[in-house]
Amino acid sequence: MLIFSVFKTLTDQRVTVELKNDLSITGTLKSVDQFLNIRLDGIKVLDEQRYPHMMAVKNCFIRGSVVRYVQLPAEHVDTQLLEDATRREAANQTKR
Amino acid sequence: MSSLQGYVDRPVLLVLQDGRAIVGTMAGFDQKSNVVLSDSKERVYSADEGVEEIPLGLYLVKGDQIVLIGELDEEKDRSVDLSTIRADPIPPIHY
Figure 1 (cartoon, rainbow over the protein chains, first blue to last red):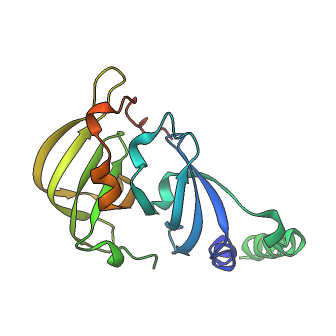
Figure 2 (figure 1 turned 90 degrees about the vertical axis):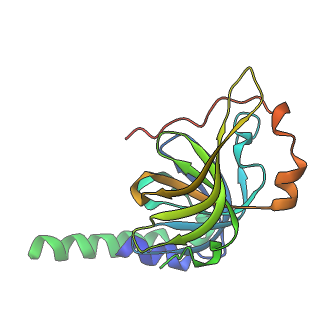
């Protein structure tokens, strides 16, 4: 749930999504849902020589289950806040 | 919900878990991201021949097979001569 909230704060930022088929796609984060499915606008595939398959694609919906990494813009993430929040959530979970 | 509603009746490219690429018009979808495509064609990429398009017609793709759904810029897509494209297929997903 926490990561879902983090992604929501990052809408309209440029992010790079690396998929489990080694494709990396950069785009403007338009929306996220509870499965961490991601919608990107104005996309660019990182290695276009190797992956010309998406040349004519302007925006896309990526299934959350195939995402390996999301590279976030560091200046838009409050790492300290995120660290505190994750620890709080972890503490709450062990209590239960 | 990061909905697929915006893609209905639009030309889309579907990338599947096994690396296949299918283009078609999005006819519908549901909450499990199962997708129905009309007038769909599979695009078979290969490193030593141009892209081969295989007509599939009306297709239902199960949501759990889908990697990515992209909206095609029709003009740009038409301007690309697929027979000149040489590329390996998209790799399959490995967990």
